[in-house]
Length: 279
Length: 332
Image (tube, rainbow over all chains, first blue to last red; front, side, top):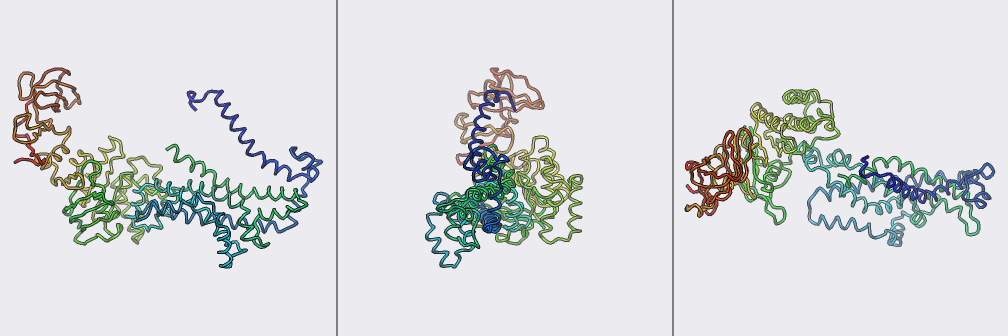
């Protein structure tokens, strides 16, 4: 660190602002996790205090594990998220490669068309999507969710990845062509490893809305067999009685997988976000 | 076994015509350099030969076979790129062997060829390393080695020295020259640096704005440029061009190289004042502002002491003065 740009008051100021933001961002999450370990009386009596020996209670977790098929819901969420993520990254990267690498008529129009989805929320098409799923017999299947989420994630993926793919050296791809590599080998072996940081960025931005989504599971796959975690947690939200222990426990558990995936991607993520900026 | 014919090749990107009908013949074993200012189409022409770009019209014939519709890997060529373009995930050995592996060459043969190429380029200690662990000069040698193991009919070099520093550039230039002498292979080399062109080439192709201005040996281009562009492009410092009318000549422009001018403190053809002097040790470049000829450069061999502001007389060597017509062509 050079002293010219880093004075002590400025460092303190910057840290104060960042710490404040961190506290604000983490506050709800901490409240949820804290209260998930408390008895019902503890939650309502003193919602902001951490669990004490008196209020500590695992009733929420035992309810969640015991009642309802939560392991199964988790499995559904995981299958949907991972499968959608896989398809978004695969098709997004392939489309981005085509848009950035090949000159063809309507290239820029095609790029614009593919990016249009960023501006139009997919939920506007819910009715049509539901009709389509009913007609094709996909209601109450995980396939329906995977298809919808893949469509939802693609525009941003194509948009971000095509920008990064343009930066991959032409010479490298041409060297591959002269050595007789197929376009697929060039794509998978030469280009994809070089855009890995941006792939991680796209993965995180795609993954979180899918994992947290309530809308499409509720409409397209509400059956017991296909419930996702967010939809499963609704089980404890009644019109008259709400089992807060169970809801908080379910939500705390739901944070875990997405957190693990985030940790996996985050090392790459930082590079993905900054690589365009500093170079 | 490595001849190349380019017949009326044209290339357009949309409405922009980059190559305007190129005809060229390269015989087996020749070292041909394409030289020209940036944007003249020399790299595009090389990419058309390699098959990385399709020509809009015209034919590319390698060894008597029309390869206009053949993919790059099947043309029997190897290419060295300006940015090295090594595969970052492969070791030096695998970088060199990949093309042969793709072509289905037996492993023993691949090893043999890598052995020869790496000893030729002194790359043996680095065979197990990845490109990221090599210096720029080593990387470019690996890239050259990758071309050598393919034993191509045609070597294509796309500004291979541009990313190297000055000292390495001279070394690598020497290595490429030796490589050519040793392999006796046909090589096509693209550069914007006329020093590289002069030192390496058997035959130089000067390109400008998508057209060939002149083809010839280095000394031929230096001694007998066909037009004003070639005369100005070949030779450093650049040839002096003086408006013919100011000198009372019939030609539109008079050209004389800085080294073909002599200076004298007392008398001469063009009287001028010294604007600036560059002392390079082996020679001295003087910039003179002349009454008749305008600003000219004079190159004097050895040390010559001249202060800015001093008056000097420059005299061109009449035998080495070029006269250009209104169309830029040399007047005989």
